[in-house]
Amino acid sequence: MPQPIETPQDGPGPASSPGRGLIRDLLIASAGGLAVLVVGLSAMSLGWIGDKGTDAPATPRAAREAAYFQPPPRSAIPDGPDGEAIRRGEALFMNTPANAAAFTGNSLSCVNCHLDGGRRANASPMWSAWGLYPMFRAKNGRINTMEDRIMGCFTFSMNAQASSSGGPPPAGHDIYRDLQAYMHYLATGAPSGVEMAGGGYPKVDLPSQGYDPRRGAGVYATNCALCHGEDGQGRTNANGQPVFPPLWGPQSYNWGAGMARINTAAAFIKTNMPLGQTGRLSDQEAWDVAAFINSHERPRDPRQTGTVQENARRNHTGGKTFYGKVVDGRLLGGGVR
Ligand code: HEC
Ligand code: HEC
Image (cartoon, rainbow, N blue to C red):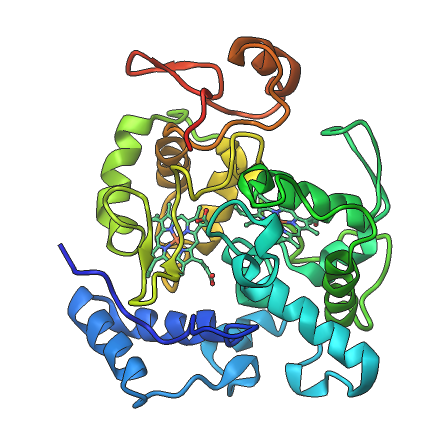
């Protein structure tokens, strides 16, 4: 088993450096093996390889992505109050536990699920989300503004209930202004009110063999444990800051999150994981490994009143989920702190 890997990119300060995902990708894609991965990451921490940020030179990925909408580069962020808000929003997006500490109940950042700072196509990029709101959401049965939508991310993906304030930023908080300033910037020149190519996570049809967490355990050991840990708790650097995010347990997204649905996780994973080797998993493997990670206990669904079974009937009938189901003799959904 590899030892915890140290990388420099999550250093203290307001924002971790954008573009770290891309550099990591390049290293890992060219590596194709643990030894080179570790050497590559050490080279980075020793400063042999610089992080060039998201304005990095053309790569195969860049060529592929040129078919999609291109958000403006960081270098074009204006000076003045608008630019300051955009930069604060970017910092919130890249390192949420540090920059929204009072409202983040786990170790995840927005960028962990919306890759490359919310720029990457097919990783639910912010440039496509921006023009879709306000929008009706069945999840809460009303029209959601973008602020409502982000409040939902704090409530579920960031498990805000376990934060020091006990909940998401209250309505009207500057955190929403700054995140929206950043999204609006990424969407400069994007159309409004249409679903854009590369928006969301591309759906993956349920394969013929359905999904099976036991098969998924094998997929996980081969393709994921290296970075996310055999115990799914991710890996931190020497300062205790997350380098590879956790997939279940107390520091992960809660049972109410979109990612806790097997279909949604399969879609994210199929197109985006293993990081740097996307397209490696078959549809079957993506569903099985999604079932595996989502058959582990995680923080409780904040909407739960009454029993897990009651909440399952109220809030978990739509998607594919293990919430309220018995796996290996255990009822899932009780939560973990
Ligand atoms: C654990 C993964 C995860 C984290 C962390 C996360 N999100 Fe998301 N986000 C998702 C998923 C999955 C969806 C897709 C919608 C769904 O099924 O709930 C989504 C959807 C969205 C959308 C709507 C996209 C669209 O096209 O309609 C926005 C906006 C968004 N997230 C913003 C954020 C922000 C801002 C943060 C940080 C405060 C964040 N997310 C953190 C997983 C995550
Ligand atoms: C090379 C390292 C690496 C491998 C291998 C890898 N991941 Fe990831 N994964 C990451 C990183 C890094 C992120 C966060 C992305 C970012 O912040 O840029 C991530 C994010 C995620 C997320 C969303 C964030 C969270 O913690 O919930 C999920 C889910 C996920 N990975 C699942 C998987 C699965 C399943 C596999 C195996 C099929 C896998 N990953 C393989 C590095 C890896």
